Image 1 (cartoon, one colour):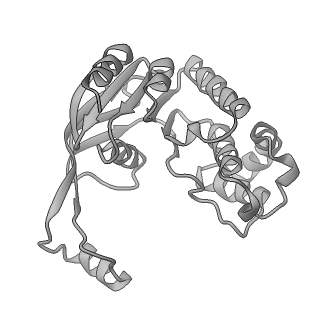
Image 2 (image 1 turned 180 degrees about the vertical axis):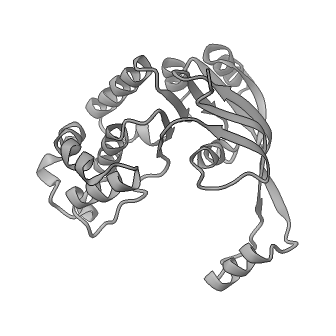
Length: 242
């Protein structure tokens, strides 16, 4: 069976910027990389996930968790190593990413659905399901700028799960919102797991990782400290202290 997601000795570096860069400077940097100092966001990271497995990513801020998710989506490319993804990927990586504050909730649903690969027909067929799951029906025709952060997450999560991905990537945002919607998110994730979907969850909540994931990967300063069962990795991470 082909893995849903595979990282093979992946290294990713970024340039250390000393200050803001103009667009012109960024374009020049892309075409003619400078000799500015670089830092390794990831170094020789390897892991493999079979269909239906759930992996929790734990570690301090800046450890490399979000870089793993960004690489898995193809938003950036590795400097070295290879990444294999089999199946449709949907990602929730940043609060409100892909949403426009001047568009209504309904308009943002349609735009975001298209960005996630849904056809216009699929978007129309799933629109009511998305709105119902999000719980923001009374605000769906209001501009997004009047939404709270929790409402935006509800809408974003609802569109993401409606896209019916084979691989779902989540970066922390599941913890934003009220307890009722949080419980709905957990129920939906468990439903995805029962359907054989692959999930990668980056979170500071070791309780959430232990509850939802079979496996975990502890990363620090771009390198894997430990990977294995979620129970073992979370216990080791907690024992290490702050």
